[in-house]
Image 1 (cartoon, rainbow, N blue to C red):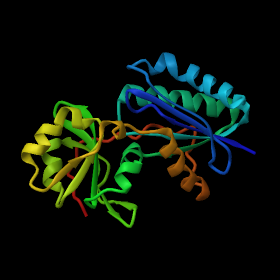
Image 2 (spheres, helix red, strand yellow):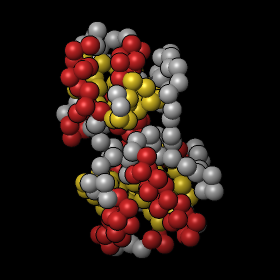
Image 3 (cartoon, rainbow, N blue to C red):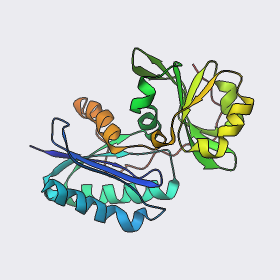
Length: 229
């Protein structure tokens, strides 16, 4: 049975998991890379394959958390994914990173009904989107964006739980300036995990939504007018 490799390199962590075709996880790792993804990514994949008693030739699909996030880390991850895909004829599935952060287990079970992941984009900006939650399911209500945190707060109309590493830089600003009730996810839920990348990617695999390996690039977003539906 084809094995699946799920990866996230968008944050300060390298998060990876190997699963069988049904989505059952065989081996996983979540390690801080400290801006050294380039040196550590491929060795971590090798270590994970050894832990699972597999070889790279056993991998038939790679699910990659494609951003937005750290531009350098995303490029490193995308280059590795494309290199493996070309040489081994592996299919690629791309999952938006903000979806992964928003889908954290803690967030699904909590109130209020709005979930907003924010990733630090520097200079007062955050990568972000807005999700509504109903009966444990999330629905995205804003396009993936990079905007000033002050502008984001104007777009949100209701009590919200915030998550993502942007809270380290802008958490106090949100508490001081948000007009509605703001709750913050614990820090251990701020970063994407390969297990969630896998879960979201499995849905795309079922729909046959594979990336074009030749054209595949990380999801980069730029400042534009943003409207929450």
